[in-house]
Image (cartoon, rainbow, N blue to C red):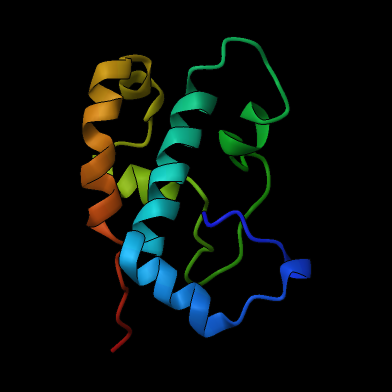
Length: 112
């Protein structure tokens, strides 16, 4: 985001000041995730990036308890569907939803 490298040896306080002035880091990361999800969903061929994103365990039994969160679960929860590929195929609609997704934030699950 700031085009810095570890070898630049910039103080953390300086980085925080620059980030606070410019953008919210969480929103930026969520926008990048949204863009990548749209890109992968629109792929027509069977590339390696498409396979792990849309792969589901079908023949093995999963362990008991709360299941691990998948990378795509965040997007699926936001859209309310398990197949975001159809929505991502409409590029205008996907771009329109990007800003809302970035500000949506991750859902926090409370355990009572």
